Image 1 (cartoon, rainbow, N blue to C red):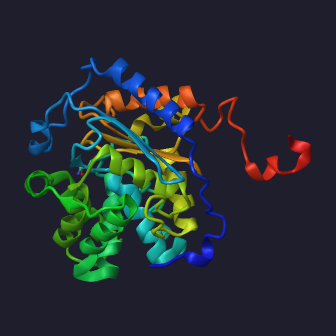
Image 2 (cartoon, protein in one colour; image 1 turned 180 degrees about the vertical axis):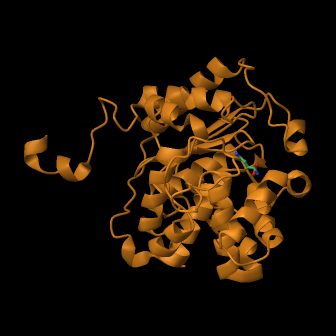
Length: 340
Ligand code: GLN
């Protein structure tokens, strides 16, 4: 897939070592501040996830210029889980465009838990691609369009976004496959609604595998920076996603990425983000940075406790909130003399 003509304005300027040092000292500060926090609990509905060492904590930031700053357990692998939903959604948008994508899944916050076995009654489609029903609909469409090679393509695209070859945690995959009864129920609901027309087990194979892809906080930062950088991986310069796909994905991450904690997150952090029950969170500052955090204890909404606290700290410390008083707004408008 190539999007070259669509990316006329993605020109990186190197980050200064001073700004990188400032980011690093902020990461170290939050690492020290939250390291002792043991609030929350490991996800236990997937048996393998309950075995993860709970005290792990890693933070990373990747810039649009391809620099990466990482502290703590930023190179410890864990499963990407629901963060995969954002990237599969971008993939489907690239593969089939908006009309066909939005015929399969909506973009409305659901207000329900992520694993709710429900569709939007108005459309008979999942509310949005960030809850399980929506992600399984997206996986189903990809499986139908790409055939038996669908998951290989997913892994390839995720690897391009991370800038290195990723793999699957087979034990987590097996554990999900054995115990994913709610997801199986959702799969049958979607097939009955004719969202896809391939066997449910084949769709769930893609979905469970995509959730079991192993990443690190550093990988998440680079994957986030790929979205921040208009779909081009800033470290490898590889063109991964088209700009329309990136824009829609970030929009849905902003409104629906943090499950039923999304409103609180939008108010407190003010960035498009996506969390996973493996303890990862990815957050994106458009045109500037990707943030990757990992800490496996989760709050009631299923979001990493220390990850969320760190993102609040970074947003406050660097003025990242979309509506922060220090946020300079549109560079286009700033370019017009009267707006300065
Ligand atoms: N694989 C998990 C599930 O389907 C993903 C959920 C999540 O990270 N919220 O239950």
